[in-house]
Image 1: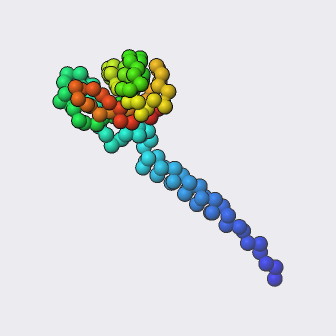
Image 2: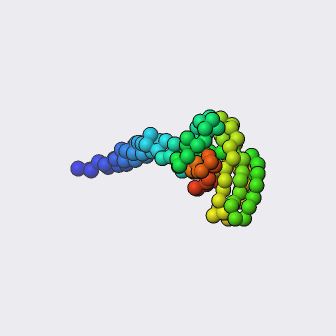
Image 3: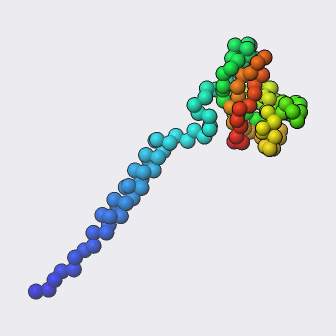
Amino acid sequence: MARRKQRSQSWKGIILAVGLVVAAFVGAVLFFPGDTNPYRTSPDLDAKDYLENANSLRGNVYRVEGEVANQLENSPASGRLIAVEMISGHEVLPVLVPPEFNHMNIQKGQRFYFLLEVGAGGILKTKNLIKS
C-alpha cells in the first residue's frame, strides 16, 4: 500500500505569525500614543495668567514648547535672556537661560521644549531645555 504524502501545515503558522505581528502593532499604537514632550508630568504654562500676574505663579514649574524669536541680552555671569514665541497661542515670553546651558547653541528660529520655573519678580528661569 502506497503512503500518501502529508501536506505541510506551514500556512497555518504563517497566518498565526502575521496575526501576532498585527496585534503587536495595534497594541503599540494604542498604548504608546506618541506624545513626544519630555516634560509630560509638568503642567503647561498659561501665558495669559503669566502676563496678567506673574508673581502669583512664583515658585511653580511649567513646561513650554516654543520657538526662539530673538536673543535679548547675553551675560557670561547671568546667562542669556531670550524671547520665546509659544507654539500654542503665539504669545512671546522672556526666558532666562542660565550659564549652565552655555554649551547649547540657541539660535533664532529653533524650537525647544523648556522646563521653566517662575522665579522672584516673575522671571521665567530655565531648569532644563531640549531641542525639539
